[in-house]
Image (tube, rainbow, N blue to C red; front, top):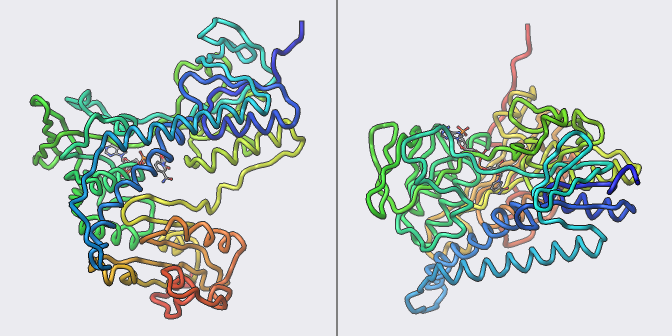
Length: 461
Ligand code: NDP
């Protein structure tokens, strides 16, 4: 009997696991993927992709309104939530099939089952009871919504998972949280016509992002009608037939048709048998790994959200690829987690890379800041009161770009290439040497000549 049944068992067919499986198989490894739910994972099934489809849907409302300024007369637009959900589900099913086909074409065996480690070398597939002895194990089980501390009525609260499949569009929704998911869903529901209250415990949404960007987004979302209630938490949720009353920590209450929490996601490590296998964890509940994604057990690796490093799909994909290169391609590859660009698909959307102004001031002796806020050209005839925001943070000593922060249409599209410039250590002078593409919003990036602020740290005595 062979010592190992497969070279690699991947647990979890999300973005990271699928990439790792495909690349490992390409190196000639025999690969099995165990997935208890659907192939595609959070990003494809109930995350980035369906979310972006809802974002597109929500933005038509403004487009219809703005069309009038451009000479169009439209009938009263009618929105049908169930058509959107059905069409979105059809696209997700198509993508799931595409992921499955790609894996199968690469020679990967997909097993629809939960997989549990019995010890460091044995994995049981619960669907069949079969025991597998893989040469390597990759844990890529992702993360799941966390509902926060137990409060009365928590059973009435939904997460983003359920938001994708609501039977009807809620006329009024309260969302608690102040980060990616809360802000994105607040904008989605607002655009689709729901009355939205966003409850956040801190002093302003998007903690960790640049302070000017946060203030700008707060103002823009408020202009669009999102009620942002900062410095508060939800203490209890009471149900009266089909409506819910959320009691807040300032003793106020909000009556809505749905309550959703987006308070972060916790790594899916429960009941996987990781303790039995000797796998260790980080204080933030992720699986502890080294820069090559190896756990405390040498033949067990972990990638993506389950490691709670940088929880973004493209990072998980990069980690999965690097794992396969390292273990099966003979090329040890560590993923660089610095300067990962990111976008928040709020309305207006956000793109950022690198240091915030505050972080730059903590780390650098001299910091120069360039920023502007302006009304995008398209908004003029539309008659819409909205402004875009751009900020460049520059190391005042080397003139190197260290951060970029954008709020406005297409911010996510712009930030991708700003990240290339930042990674290539472009200086402000390099950026200034580039001729603008006119008329665009992005041209602001290369025409920001006036320094708005110069921070100079006092030299130590
Ligand atoms: P995050 O982990 O990013 O943020 C959690 C939010 O909940 C914060 O605003 C936090 O407040 C708040 N919070 C945490 N605990 C409590 C509590 N006990 N009471 C009240 N508020 C609380 O979570 P998300 O759910 O928004 O996102 C989950 C992950 O998904 C993130 O890692 C993100 O990277 C990823 N994601 C990325 C997207 C993208 O790239 N566009 C889109 C969606 C998700 P505080 O700030 O004060 O800590």
